[in-house]
Image (cartoon, rainbow, N blue to C red):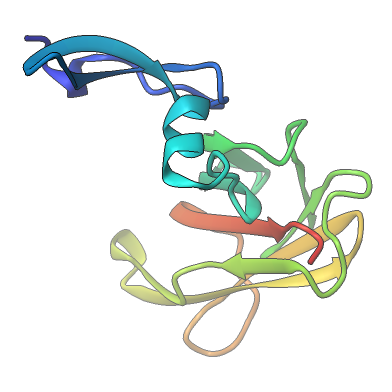
Length: 160
């Protein structure tokens, strides 16, 4: 029997994807393949569809303060373009991607910059349908250019 976690994760799943299962046929348990659609129909439902698209990344910056995104997962579509707007202020842009009232932003609030013994407070905000803002402030409330392996997540929920 195969170890299930040894298979690569799929970016997208569909009703035509296969799942290994077993079925009782004439009193014998038979191992066979089922499609996700077959399983959903048997259960009386439809295949799972995520209620949102997601962008997850680890943010760092170069010596000039320019943001660098190490994208972990992106189902929003194209890559978000990150740029430094001003000290400690970074703009993420993707045309029409951030639906008003349906975009959720997550950023752990406090980081600690060990080499400078400085606490950094970070937050994200929605700017418009094309952009989101990531800001870093030091312990005095001054904007600071330092992305220190900051985890971010952006969710855009599907229309109701």
